Amino acid sequence: MEPARVLAGVQALPPIRGRPACEPCAVRFQIEDYKVRTTRLHWDDLDIAGFAERPLDPATLRVLGYMHDIEHHTVCYLRDLLVSPAHADPDIMAFLGFWVFEEFWHGEAIGAVLDAHGIESGAPRIAKLRQRLGWRERVRPVVAALGSAVVGARLLAVHMTWGAINEWTTQAGYLRLAQRSGHPVLAELTRRIAKQEGRHIDFYASQAEQRLAGDRAAQRLVRRALRHVWRPVGSGVMPARETRFVIDHLFGGDDGLVIARRIDRRIDALPGLSGLGLIEGATTGRPIESVTGPPALAA
Image (cartoon, rainbow, N blue to C red; front, top):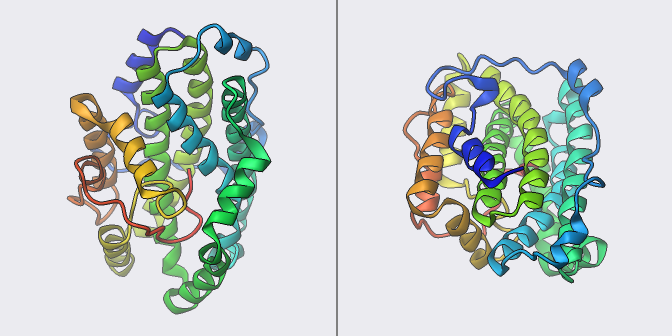
């Protein structure tokens, strides 16, 4: 994919299935359709070996390492969701099974790029990440279960909204990385990943709107959680300096601010959530703390 086409994709960055960002969410995710369409990501036809002659720059590789680790951490987020009210909803559980499958292959694809540059990926790298997280990772399922017991079914509105926001930023991040790197092979790979992330967006955004619409208590709960607890994808899993680097690289400058504001308008369109300015706030220097927020909210 040519860099110019990637840039056009970033600038267009369509909201949910072409819906203008300022309009109410109208998408209705069809789980039966998703079951048929879901598949592992394929990249065997891409010239991964060509990175030897035309390698990526260090900043792009640093961001890819972050993305690799978070994609492979998705299964841990799924673990935490299983102790929430989500386990009683067959549509959510069907989606999550395919979601974690697709995210795994996103991590594997990025791992192939890291391997081509002599950078560790896959199981050895992920094992070190899990070991570094230590006791915090071990207690997360307990915290998730206690939170679900206290808050109840409305916690799902938080999960689904949080997931939509993270998927919006993840998709934008992949497209932005392709544009910044100017590498045609990486551009095509990230385009394929972003396409699958679009289906994840459809699910989370549809669920978020349904659970927020007409429920003022849910709106207040979600708004409070986003305002006080939300942090960008990977916060609390990756070191704060790495999260800040990724944000600055992908969403820094005027072009990045345009994308951040576009995502904020998507959040504004969800019932009861206007005016939060989450993404612009993250891109303009709000401290990145070790807060992961509700579990099960990876890219």
